[in-house]
Length: 449
Image (cartoon, rainbow, N blue to C red):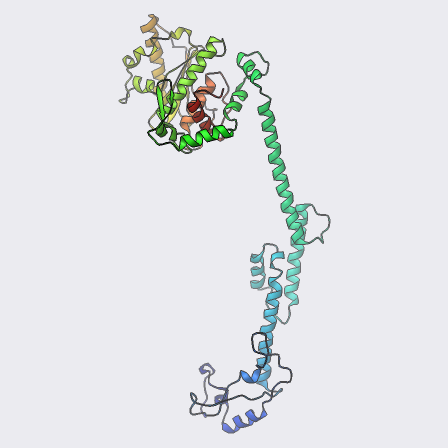
């Protein structure tokens, strides 16, 4: 009988020497008295004899009858098969036991995978004590770290309970810190009553600059009525007129530029300029604050033409109704196409100021302010104004924008605070609330403060 390769997976009798040995081997097979092969995956009446297939015909394997015979206990094959199935059963039980403890391991399932694939921790089902030692080490480390994080005094506390306690403690601390911050901010805002604000504007108090009061008014949280007004305004059609500030109509299209991430357009900026001028006039009449005069965004575009040429004649009539000799500050926004800045001619302090949220220096704007104030005094009052000793003021320690769309809000905020001689105490985080306050002021026709 020719030898056959084990990879051919022929029936077992084909690997024996001859039919006689096969008959003797078949006759010697008996069933094990207590077979471990009856696993949970096999039927109750299934044993090793139902697994072994023995052919009775060596020449016709495809049509050979199948015979089931009992296995003898001292059979080498039976012992090997029993050992293999026993290992499978032990591996299944070990895997089930280990997966129940995965959540207790430090690092979760990733740690379990690391332990199972670690060469120093071989997976031998017959010696589960090695894995038990690894699990116990991981549990001890987990308990120690969680106990340290949660401040537990007992190192034997449950790892799960310690982990939950640590999370609860972290959440409680975070909420407590947030509540303290809110309480401090609320106390800071509530200490400014309307009477104290008016006193700060008049300079009757000894608390110093009133920039905090102005910031509190502009960054105050909106109530339900104000939120509903803004919600309806932002939903309005683009062509619908929502407000009229002075002679400037504000449509839904203009209002949309106040949305998050949008660039402010000229109508919104000039509407705010009108309201800032009205507030400055009222305060000047009451003898409060500096006397300010505002130009809209078209002033600089007119005096400094698109071809970058200075042309005083384009703005000669813009000051026919105001005497600049009685003005402390001339304030106007500068639109550079895709960027908003603020320019101030400070006649009181004799300097030319330029505020840019990107901290750039516009020499053309500074030169334009110099030439304009000289020409206007000569034209209106026949006075040759000497500005040779006036200084250029381009501060670099001002609030700066951290994105590419809040330049218009920064320019209006500069104008709002500079017009009251306030320190620039706002920053980027106030811009979303400033947008809402500007939108609400345009709808109501009144500034917050």
